[in-house]
Image (tube, rainbow, N blue to C red; front, side):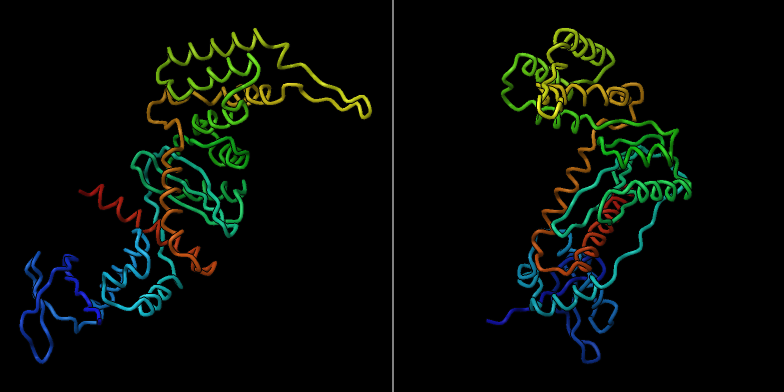
Length: 331
Protein backbone atom coordinates (compact mmCIF):
# COMPACT_ATOMS: atom_id res chain seq x y z
CA UNK A 1 0.00 0.00 0.00
CA UNK A 2 1.54 3.32 -1.09
CA UNK A 3 1.90 6.14 1.38
CA UNK A 4 0.52 9.60 0.77
CA UNK A 5 3.06 12.33 1.40
CA UNK A 6 1.69 14.84 3.86
CA UNK A 7 2.08 18.50 3.00
CA UNK A 8 2.94 21.15 5.58
CA UNK A 9 1.92 24.80 5.57
CA UNK A 10 5.11 26.86 5.01
CA UNK A 11 3.65 29.76 7.01
CA UNK A 12 2.49 28.18 10.28
CA UNK A 13 3.79 24.59 10.04
CA UNK A 14 0.27 23.10 10.29
CA UNK A 15 -0.08 19.70 8.58
CA UNK A 16 -3.82 19.73 7.95
CA UNK A 17 -3.91 21.24 4.44
CA UNK A 18 -6.36 20.60 1.62
CA UNK A 19 -6.13 20.87 -2.16
CA UNK A 20 -7.38 24.23 -3.42
CA UNK A 21 -7.53 24.10 -7.21
CA UNK A 22 -4.68 24.54 -9.64
CA UNK A 23 -2.74 27.56 -10.84
CA UNK A 24 -0.59 27.57 -14.01
CA UNK A 25 -0.71 23.80 -14.01
CA UNK A 26 0.46 23.48 -10.38
CA UNK A 27 -1.57 22.13 -7.49
CA UNK A 28 -2.53 24.73 -4.88
CA UNK A 29 -3.15 24.02 -1.18
CA UNK A 30 -4.99 25.83 1.58
CA UNK A 31 -4.06 25.61 5.27
CA UNK A 32 -6.99 24.93 7.59
CA UNK A 33 -5.14 26.63 10.43
CA UNK A 34 -4.02 30.01 9.04
CA UNK A 35 -5.99 30.07 5.80
CA UNK A 36 -3.01 30.80 3.56
CA UNK A 37 -3.00 29.47 -0.01
CA UNK A 38 0.28 28.23 -1.50
CA UNK A 39 2.03 25.88 -3.92
CA UNK A 40 5.27 23.92 -3.58
CA UNK A 41 6.97 25.27 -6.69
CA UNK A 42 9.47 27.30 -4.63
CA UNK A 43 12.55 25.29 -3.69
CA UNK A 44 13.07 27.25 -0.47
CA UNK A 45 9.61 26.18 0.74
CA UNK A 46 10.46 22.55 -0.01
CA UNK A 47 13.80 22.82 1.84
CA UNK A 48 12.14 24.41 4.86
CA UNK A 49 9.62 21.57 4.94
CA UNK A 50 12.43 19.00 4.95
CA UNK A 51 14.25 20.90 7.71
CA UNK A 52 11.18 20.71 9.94
CA UNK A 53 11.28 16.92 9.70
CA UNK A 54 15.00 17.00 10.55
CA UNK A 55 14.25 19.06 13.66
CA UNK A 56 11.57 16.56 14.66
CA UNK A 57 14.06 13.73 14.23
CA UNK A 58 16.70 15.47 16.36
CA UNK A 59 14.46 16.81 19.11
CA UNK A 60 11.69 14.25 19.30
CA UNK A 61 11.53 10.61 20.23
CA UNK A 62 10.75 9.43 16.69
CA UNK A 63 12.91 7.00 14.80
CA UNK A 64 13.59 7.40 11.08
CA UNK A 65 10.81 4.93 10.28
CA UNK A 66 8.32 6.81 12.45
CA UNK A 67 9.22 10.08 10.72
CA UNK A 68 8.72 8.32 7.40
CA UNK A 69 5.26 7.14 8.47
CA UNK A 70 4.34 10.70 9.52
CA UNK A 71 5.73 12.49 6.48
CA UNK A 72 5.07 10.05 3.66
CA UNK A 73 8.71 10.20 2.52
CA UNK A 74 10.70 6.97 2.40
CA UNK A 75 13.27 6.26 5.16
CA UNK A 76 16.01 6.20 2.51
CA UNK A 77 15.07 9.66 1.25
CA UNK A 78 14.89 11.07 4.77
CA UNK A 79 18.25 9.50 5.61
CA UNK A 80 19.87 11.22 2.62
CA UNK A 81 18.45 14.61 3.62
CA UNK A 82 19.39 14.21 7.27
CA UNK A 83 22.94 13.15 6.37
CA UNK A 84 23.27 16.37 4.37
CA UNK A 85 22.30 18.40 7.44
CA UNK A 86 24.65 16.37 9.68
CA UNK A 87 27.59 17.13 7.38
CA UNK A 88 27.39 20.67 8.74
CA UNK A 89 26.53 22.23 12.07
CA UNK A 90 24.90 25.54 13.09
CA UNK A 91 26.70 28.66 14.24
CA UNK A 92 26.53 29.25 17.97
CA UNK A 93 25.84 32.76 19.30
CA UNK A 94 26.57 33.98 22.83
CA UNK A 95 24.53 36.84 24.21
CA UNK A 96 26.83 39.60 25.47
CA UNK A 97 26.57 42.27 28.17
CA UNK A 98 25.02 39.93 30.75
CA UNK A 99 25.62 38.94 34.33
CA UNK A 100 25.29 35.18 34.65
CA UNK A 101 25.26 32.41 37.24
CA UNK A 102 26.90 29.51 35.47
CA UNK A 103 26.44 25.79 35.87
CA UNK A 104 29.38 23.81 34.50
CA UNK A 105 29.43 20.04 34.09
CA UNK A 106 30.43 17.41 31.59
CA UNK A 107 29.04 14.09 30.43
CA UNK A 108 30.49 11.20 28.47
CA UNK A 109 29.03 9.47 25.43
CA UNK A 110 29.80 5.86 24.40
CA UNK A 111 32.29 6.82 21.67
CA UNK A 112 34.72 8.55 24.06
CA UNK A 113 33.18 11.95 23.42
CA UNK A 114 32.82 14.40 26.31
CA UNK A 115 30.35 17.29 26.24
CA UNK A 116 31.15 20.19 28.60
CA UNK A 117 28.16 22.47 29.04
CA UNK A 118 28.01 26.04 30.36
CA UNK A 119 24.45 26.83 31.36
CA UNK A 120 23.12 30.26 32.30
CA UNK A 121 20.79 29.35 35.14
CA UNK A 122 19.29 32.86 35.25
CA UNK A 123 17.55 32.39 31.89
CA UNK A 124 17.59 28.56 31.93
CA UNK A 125 19.54 28.27 28.69
CA UNK A 126 22.87 26.93 27.43
CA UNK A 127 25.39 29.75 27.14
CA UNK A 128 28.22 27.78 25.52
CA UNK A 129 29.48 24.23 25.04
CA UNK A 130 32.57 22.25 24.09
CA UNK A 131 32.98 18.79 22.62
CA UNK A 132 36.27 17.22 23.68
CA UNK A 133 37.86 13.94 24.76
CA UNK A 134 38.16 14.99 28.41
CA UNK A 135 37.31 17.83 30.81
CA UNK A 136 40.72 19.48 30.39
CA UNK A 137 41.40 22.49 32.63
CA UNK A 138 43.13 24.42 29.81
CA UNK A 139 40.13 24.08 27.50
CA UNK A 140 37.62 25.11 30.17
CA UNK A 141 39.79 28.08 31.12
CA UNK A 142 39.92 29.13 27.46
CA UNK A 143 36.12 28.85 27.19
CA UNK A 144 35.57 30.98 30.29
CA UNK A 145 37.97 33.66 29.04
CA UNK A 146 36.24 33.71 25.65
CA UNK A 147 32.83 34.05 27.30
CA UNK A 148 34.06 37.00 29.36
CA UNK A 149 35.70 38.64 26.33
CA UNK A 150 32.23 38.91 24.76
CA UNK A 151 31.00 41.08 27.62
CA UNK A 152 29.51 38.36 29.81
CA UNK A 153 30.17 38.89 33.52
CA UNK A 154 30.39 35.61 35.42
CA UNK A 155 28.95 36.23 38.88
CA UNK A 156 29.14 32.63 40.12
CA UNK A 157 30.02 29.11 39.03
CA UNK A 158 28.32 25.99 40.37
CA UNK A 159 30.09 22.71 39.63
CA UNK A 160 30.98 19.34 41.08
CA UNK A 161 34.31 18.67 42.77
CA UNK A 162 36.18 18.05 39.51
CA UNK A 163 39.71 19.45 39.79
CA UNK A 164 39.82 20.52 36.14
CA UNK A 165 36.77 22.77 36.47
CA UNK A 166 37.90 24.23 39.80
CA UNK A 167 41.38 24.94 38.45
CA UNK A 168 39.98 26.61 35.33
CA UNK A 169 37.54 28.79 37.29
CA UNK A 170 40.29 29.91 39.69
CA UNK A 171 42.47 30.93 36.75
CA UNK A 172 39.90 32.50 34.42
CA UNK A 173 37.48 34.22 36.81
CA UNK A 174 38.98 34.32 40.33
CA UNK A 175 36.45 36.94 41.47
CA UNK A 176 33.46 34.69 40.70
CA UNK A 177 31.63 33.04 43.56
CA UNK A 178 32.17 29.27 43.66
CA UNK A 179 29.42 26.91 44.76
CA UNK A 180 29.96 23.18 45.09
CA UNK A 181 27.06 21.07 43.86
CA UNK A 182 25.31 19.74 46.97
CA UNK A 183 23.76 16.86 45.03
CA UNK A 184 27.19 15.57 43.98
CA UNK A 185 28.55 15.88 47.53
CA UNK A 186 25.61 14.00 48.99
CA UNK A 187 25.63 11.31 46.30
CA UNK A 188 29.34 10.57 46.61
CA UNK A 189 29.28 10.42 50.41
CA UNK A 190 26.27 8.09 50.40
CA UNK A 191 28.07 5.84 47.91
CA UNK A 192 31.08 5.50 50.21
CA UNK A 193 28.98 5.05 53.35
CA UNK A 194 26.66 2.53 51.60
CA UNK A 195 22.96 2.14 52.33
CA UNK A 196 23.57 0.14 55.51
CA UNK A 197 26.84 1.14 57.25
CA UNK A 198 28.24 -1.44 59.64
CA UNK A 199 29.72 1.00 62.18
CA UNK A 200 27.87 3.43 64.42
CA UNK A 201 30.11 6.23 63.11
CA UNK A 202 29.04 5.41 59.56
CA UNK A 203 25.36 5.28 60.52
CA UNK A 204 25.50 8.64 62.30
CA UNK A 205 27.44 10.29 59.47
CA UNK A 206 24.96 8.94 56.92
CA UNK A 207 22.10 10.63 58.77
CA UNK A 208 24.01 13.92 58.67
CA UNK A 209 24.75 13.55 54.95
CA UNK A 210 21.07 12.88 54.20
CA UNK A 211 20.22 16.33 55.60
CA UNK A 212 22.33 18.19 53.02
CA UNK A 213 19.55 18.45 50.44
CA UNK A 214 17.22 20.00 53.04
CA UNK A 215 19.45 22.96 53.88
CA UNK A 216 17.76 26.18 52.75
CA UNK A 217 18.43 28.89 55.35
CA UNK A 218 21.30 30.18 57.44
CA UNK A 219 19.88 28.49 60.55
CA UNK A 220 19.75 25.18 58.67
CA UNK A 221 23.40 25.62 57.73
CA UNK A 222 24.54 26.43 61.27
CA UNK A 223 22.61 23.49 62.70
CA UNK A 224 24.11 21.11 60.11
CA UNK A 225 27.65 22.36 60.71
CA UNK A 226 27.17 21.84 64.44
CA UNK A 227 26.03 18.25 63.83
CA UNK A 228 29.11 17.58 61.70
CA UNK A 229 31.44 19.15 64.28
CA UNK A 230 29.89 17.13 67.13
CA UNK A 231 30.20 13.96 65.03
CA UNK A 232 33.90 14.63 64.44
CA UNK A 233 34.56 15.26 68.13
CA UNK A 234 32.83 12.00 69.01
CA UNK A 235 34.53 9.80 66.40
CA UNK A 236 37.86 11.52 65.73
CA UNK A 237 39.92 8.64 67.10
CA UNK A 238 37.84 6.12 65.15
CA UNK A 239 38.24 7.78 61.74
CA UNK A 240 41.97 8.41 62.29
CA UNK A 241 42.77 4.82 63.26
CA UNK A 242 45.43 3.38 60.95
CA UNK A 243 46.40 -0.10 59.92
CA UNK A 244 50.05 -0.93 59.18
CA UNK A 245 51.35 -3.79 57.06
CA UNK A 246 54.43 -5.07 58.83
CA UNK A 247 56.21 -6.41 55.72
CA UNK A 248 56.09 -3.17 53.72
CA UNK A 249 55.35 -0.69 56.54
CA UNK A 250 52.54 0.68 54.40
CA UNK A 251 49.79 2.46 56.32
CA UNK A 252 46.16 3.24 55.52
CA UNK A 253 43.08 4.37 57.39
CA UNK A 254 41.37 1.35 58.89
CA UNK A 255 37.88 2.73 58.32
CA UNK A 256 38.78 4.33 55.01
CA UNK A 257 35.29 4.79 53.59
CA UNK A 258 33.99 6.65 56.65
CA UNK A 259 37.20 8.69 56.73
CA UNK A 260 36.88 9.40 52.99
CA UNK A 261 33.28 10.63 53.33
CA UNK A 262 34.19 12.97 56.19
CA UNK A 263 37.29 14.26 54.39
CA UNK A 264 35.15 14.98 51.33
CA UNK A 265 32.70 17.01 53.40
CA UNK A 266 35.50 18.89 55.15
CA UNK A 267 37.17 19.75 51.83
CA UNK A 268 33.93 20.96 50.26
CA UNK A 269 32.73 22.92 53.28
CA UNK A 270 34.17 26.35 52.29
CA UNK A 271 32.09 26.39 49.08
CA UNK A 272 29.01 24.43 50.11
CA UNK A 273 26.73 27.23 51.29
CA UNK A 274 27.49 30.24 49.09
CA UNK A 275 23.88 30.11 47.82
CA UNK A 276 22.52 31.08 51.25
CA UNK A 277 24.15 34.52 51.23
CA UNK A 278 23.64 34.93 47.46
CA UNK A 279 20.15 33.67 46.50
CA UNK A 280 20.81 33.88 42.74
CA UNK A 281 23.50 31.20 42.95
CA UNK A 282 22.16 27.69 42.18
CA UNK A 283 23.13 25.08 44.77
CA UNK A 284 23.18 22.06 42.45
CA UNK A 285 23.86 21.17 38.82
CA UNK A 286 20.69 19.08 38.64
CA UNK A 287 19.44 21.13 35.68
CA UNK A 288 22.42 19.92 33.64
CA UNK A 289 21.94 16.33 34.75
CA UNK A 290 18.35 16.49 33.48
CA UNK A 291 19.50 18.09 30.21
CA UNK A 292 22.11 15.37 29.67
CA UNK A 293 19.49 12.68 30.34
CA UNK A 294 17.13 14.02 27.66
CA UNK A 295 19.97 14.39 25.14
CA UNK A 296 21.24 10.84 25.68
CA UNK A 297 17.70 9.48 25.50
CA UNK A 298 17.20 11.11 22.11
CA UNK A 299 20.53 10.19 20.57
CA UNK A 300 20.25 6.57 21.71
CA UNK A 301 17.39 6.16 19.20
CA UNK A 302 19.71 6.93 16.29
CA UNK A 303 22.38 4.25 16.45
CA UNK A 304 24.86 3.84 13.63
CA UNK A 305 25.87 7.49 13.24
CA UNK A 306 29.50 8.12 12.29
CA UNK A 307 31.61 9.98 14.85
CA UNK A 308 31.37 13.18 12.81
CA UNK A 309 27.59 12.90 12.46
CA UNK A 310 27.34 11.98 16.14
CA UNK A 311 29.14 15.18 17.13
CA UNK A 312 27.09 17.30 14.76
CA UNK A 313 23.87 15.72 16.02
CA UNK A 314 24.78 16.96 19.52
CA UNK A 315 25.47 20.44 18.11
CA UNK A 316 22.13 20.54 16.29
CA UNK A 317 20.34 19.36 19.45
CA UNK A 318 21.93 22.17 21.49
CA UNK A 319 21.10 24.68 18.75
CA UNK A 320 17.42 23.69 18.61
CA UNK A 321 17.17 23.81 22.41
CA UNK A 322 18.68 27.29 22.40
CA UNK A 323 16.21 28.45 19.74
CA UNK A 324 13.30 27.05 21.73
CA UNK A 325 14.56 28.84 24.84
CA UNK A 326 14.76 32.16 22.97
CA UNK A 327 11.19 31.77 21.68
CA UNK A 328 10.01 31.02 25.22
CA UNK A 329 11.67 34.18 26.56
CA UNK A 330 10.14 36.32 23.81
CA UNK A 331 6.65 35.09 24.60
